[in-house]
Length: 275
Image (cartoon, rainbow, N blue to C red; front, side, top):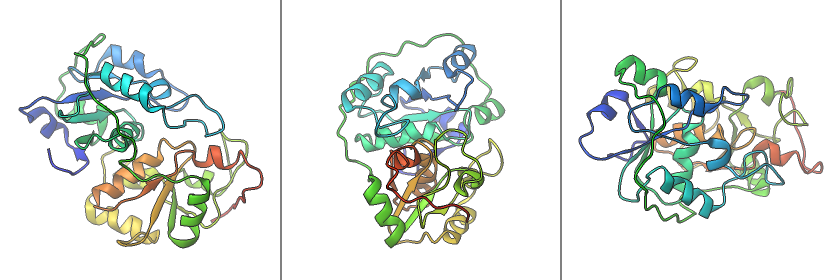
């Protein structure tokens, strides 16, 4: 497959070679993704639990810290991921959790990974073939090599906010500090700019916007070729969606995995509110 990080349902259905499918259905507050998977999934897709397979337990590194490499490797091998076979991840929340799997696999050295554009809903609309029940995949052989994607720590995020563009992928009201339903402090990293993940999409639960429209979205935020870009969100999950959108435009962005949930653990770090 090409380096472009998105794939349509039709192109996925028409692939004539092997591909590993990952069902990453998850949403903050539920419903449980595994139950949805058992009720119906793309044929052959293995279920990936975001909380246990794609993150370490909450702690000093935030609510969804990057998983320990050996544990991530074990989870991916259980799902049949091989180093020489393409991977396609999907979810039911417009790619905001599937992008986490895409990012982690790219970070750990797998170079042929895509997200299904439009996810589960698009598959049902365009293809409609569904399989029920659990999936047991042949064991994979992925050997992880961390470092394939750029990352930021808190100090790095502050530097990028000052010298480059630090994108906050959360909803606008959370960015402005008007509400904070999850973390103990409301607001954003000073000098960050807000590009909510919904702005990547044609509508709620929709597919990604075309390249020209996406380019305009990020140019308005100050993102342009040659300028350093970092992305964060609440806990480092949905920020991957903005990294994915930028990758679709051929732009590299660093992820701040700890994100806001780590930033506010240290009360000495500054907090901004408003626009």
